Length: 130
Image 1 (spheres, rainbow, N blue to C red):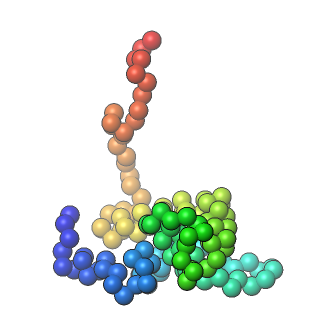
Image 2: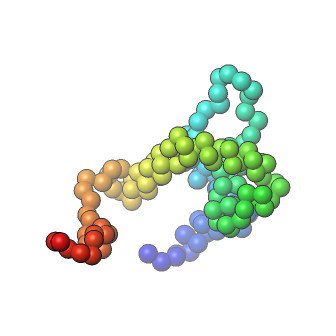
């Protein structure tokens, strides 16, 4: 599928601080998946949208943690959220949620009913039957 005038406008990031920043629509899809603030301890003061924006910035640019621009939360904060979310499987749940949303937007069932694996997808040993 090629770019149309509509999709070019939809994905243009001119008003964003960085091209990797989430739009309000994208944030609306991701935010329900993020953990609620803990009931005990110090109240959360970090904006999770800024944490996700920082992680997307790192993924897009390939910069090091310490080289992250200063308008994001401190890199140690972003790093600790990333490690926690990775350890708890949050990224997998977000990915699953986004895949289901994308399938529904295309008018398909949220979960596929079948999958195809071909010989190009599955690597086997070179030796054959020995």
